[in-house]
Length: 397
Ligand SMILES: Cc1ncc(COP(=O)(O)O)c(C=O)c1O
Image 1 (spheres, rainbow, N blue to C red):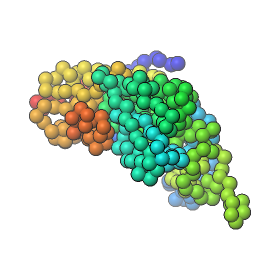
Image 2: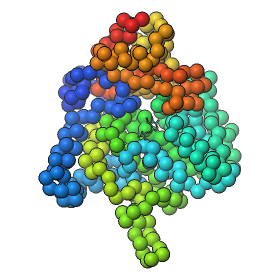
Image 3: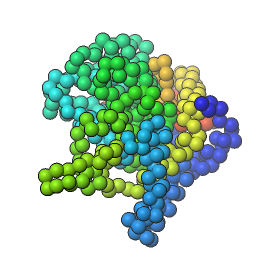
Image 4: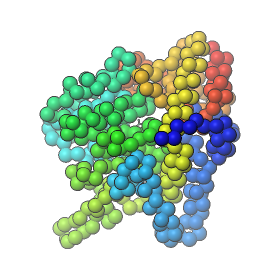
């Protein structure tokens, strides 16, 4: 494990290779990170070649690099390249997993209060169509996911444990490895939404022990918008229904029969944006070269520092809870609406976003948070930028 800290020179180099850092302070990495220049330039070059040579012809020229994206995804999450489908976002990846399960009436899904709105909608959908029941495991009084409550909630009817590792609207982290042990012990399907964790935390599907994992590229992975992927463990693939098929996913073997392909790509369709696929691969390679352990260490250091400095400003309330906290820092300012805070920071070229209760409703409603400011940190951010943010906030109060 490489835990060496980043030198100032390395951070300068990484920032020099990220054109956006020259013009603004970007603390919206939980929305979309600034992509490395090499990712953007690779995609522009590819699109230009498509325009000159033709789309299919360019694809043939880049066959190896395009294929390599699957290998890189496999390396990123410690999976086989045959366990991966490339998608255009996390929602479709997650949906392909959830709706592929042959739920029966009375089956129970266990989830956490950090669950993302799209996933809650998905649960309601299968509740209405299949008679499934959904139980939310509440966090304990310290804001930690309760493994004990999870164990107690498991029954013979429990069909699926589905959790979001890091919520959209808070800095806590769900203990996905420990949950995985419980899922395995009880032989329950396990689906993890790693949209906010991939790229800031090492995500290892073998260590997590999940059957399915959904991801998007644009957040901490620093890949382009419109990218994502789904992991489905090889042994599970045949047990999930394939929702959509084309000639890439399956073959007609007779007029009445078809054969679905024998790898993770059965969960994707043929037509997709090849430039984005290449950009996704490039972003993964970039993250792997830096090292996910090192990234996670720096993200924790910087976000810890930001939380301490914010808490020291009178009138600022930091809302994150739980023993393990990540690069998402949420706070509010007494007497100033969070949307106004965001606008005033934007005037100073500081990007933050708003975490609204509509995205993480169970957790945020429980804590009476309607909308909070979300400042999400990546490794390319600096202490100087944190100071700029804190000074700007102090001047508003
Ligand atoms: C935790 C979480 N899950 C899922 C999603 C959905 O991702 P996408 O918009 O790529 O479908 C998001 C998006 O913000 C998210 O924060």
